[in-house]
Length: 102
Figure (cartoon, rainbow, N blue to C red):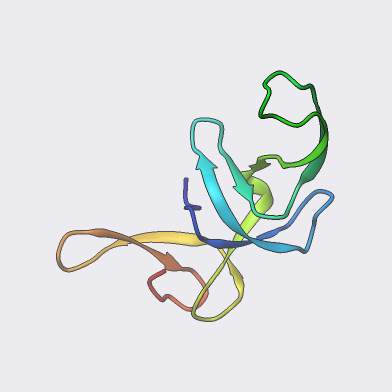
């Protein structure tokens, strides 16, 4: 999966199309990411524990990784992600628009 935690992404499809946010966590087995403040749904919660509160809470649900695009930190544009090998043998992500290492 080319999107990692703490990347800034923009939603390109769905009810939050055009909004940007930071990735809180990735779910690579399901090809999904959870973005802060986006894809928020209401969840009804029962009181099951004395410390828990019952009621309706807002929960951020995962988005399909194909519905978000990475925002390059250098050029600030939505971009696809490529990989290249550096001189020291390590693998790094790079922006396909400005060719800078992300």
